[in-house]
Structures are given as C-alpha cells and as structure tokens.
Length: 190
Image (cartoon, rainbow, N blue to C red; front, side, top):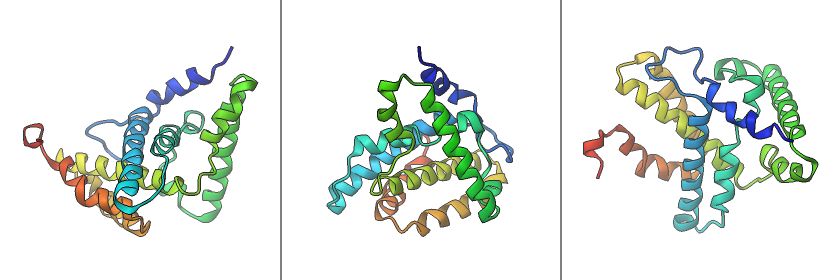
C-alpha cells in the first residue's frame, strides 16, 4: 500500500499567499497546475524560438510536483523564506526532509522514478520551473489587482523584477507574448 498519492491529493488544502488579503484564494494544487502549463510553454518556446533541446514533458512534470514538499511543511511566505540566508538554508533542509518523507510513502520499486521528480537535478529545466513559478505569481498579482485589491501592487512589481533578474529569454518571450492575455476578459480573448 502507498499513501503517496493521498498526500499529493492534499495539495488542494494548502493555501498560498497567507500573509496577504486575497479576493480569490489560490491553493497549491491550482498553482502547481498553472506552473506546469507555463513550464511546458517555456520549454516549447525555447525549443521553437531559441533552438533549445528541452524535454517539455519533463519540465511540466517537474513543475507539477515542484511544491509537493509543502504538503508537509505548508507554504512558507516568500518574505519569511527569503528573510536572511540562514532561514533560506534551514528551509531548504526542511523541504528536502519533506521530499524524503514523501518518497518513503511509495513502494520501493517506484521511489527512484519519483525521486528524480521530487529531488531533480535537471540543470537545464530547473530554471524554467523557477521562471514558471514566478510567472504564476505574477499572474496571481495581476488577477488580484484586476479585482481592485491593491495589496498585491508591490508584490507585482517585485515579482516582475525577479522574473527579469532571471535573465531567461524564454520567460521574457512569455512576458511579451502571453502575459497581456491575462488582463483580458473572456469576451476579449480570441
């Protein structure tokens, strides 16, 4: 018997943006899906427009599970997580312990497959997943601002700066070509 998938299913109970007033709550499951879609898109953009050789399916899979340790740790807000290097290092260790704990809930013969997802070493794909994570945060900020919630104003600016700081051409392409659509209404989308 394995409890791994029951744990993964609990992503829907982990709310994000805990320190901010939200007009619409976002849970970890919703966020992970969006990050997976965006990471896949970044890989495809890189392959088609920049001559890269990304495995887009693998990028999507890594993104889908990128926050899985938060099932056990909860979502530590960014201002806390990055407050200083000591906290960041300690939190990384907590995340690694949580990933190991999740892996232990799998039968032995499946662990290697999921270890490569929960503890990835994909140097080429991890920057895409990080960028997709930040792009998802930017979209959340835009949605909140569109609903009149100025609480997300500074977060939007900081997130946009963080995306540019990645210096990832794929993310810049997504910003220019895809992000404007998120500001449109359903009737304005073609």
